[in-house]
Image (cartoon, rainbow, N blue to C red):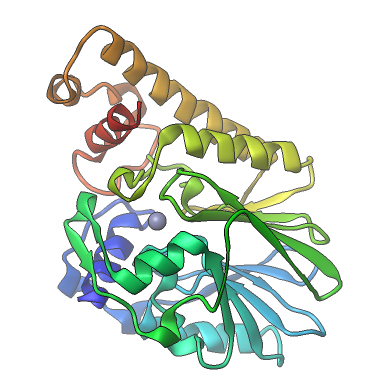
Length: 298
Ligand SMILES: [Zn+2]
């Protein structure tokens, strides 16, 4: 079942915006692409959430791990960068397209995430927007170290700050700031060039996403490289653009809600039609679903 959720999220979240059925997810065809950033850091793209990799003399830190069937390919891509073992895996949140590889990596690496990630993965979860059930995960796949606000890793000659953002994409999101390399991994607080997904039943809230984006913007300078959860690596200007777009979408819904429109009435109006040519929708009608997520958040 877990593979199904994962596949669904993967196909749904690919930049093509084409939602293929689960059976169409052909893992053999997925290629892990490596983009060098700086300071021993890389972004890896495959199927699912983008990976962040820090390599150095102390070993490898991996941010998110996509899907279990891709672990061998991800390991091979990392081996092409560094001989060192993966020592830490940081999960930005619980969704299966970011944590599916945990079960293969949790024996050798220490998995780190916010308290609520461990809780949702251990209890099992339901992602209503995709009608997907995530079964309770085995111990090996669960984060072994959890935190409730912030923590740091001191490895590879840099301080890596892991910062929880309350109620944003879910209730367990973290953004990861590799201070030495000046790289920030946003997790699913950022869908670069796409309409967002806000998992409201699992604690998501549009205002939390905006707060997280503001936090990242404040921490960034003009040299900062930004890894979004989905979409291509960008920079501070990209963060600002995305933040302002999301604020615009929020403003549209806030106004309609203040006018007394119901959720169904708002969706029926296609309130984001002016944005549909600019932002990728990862399935037909997704823009209206996003209107619903924002409406429910406010
Ligand atoms: Zn997600």
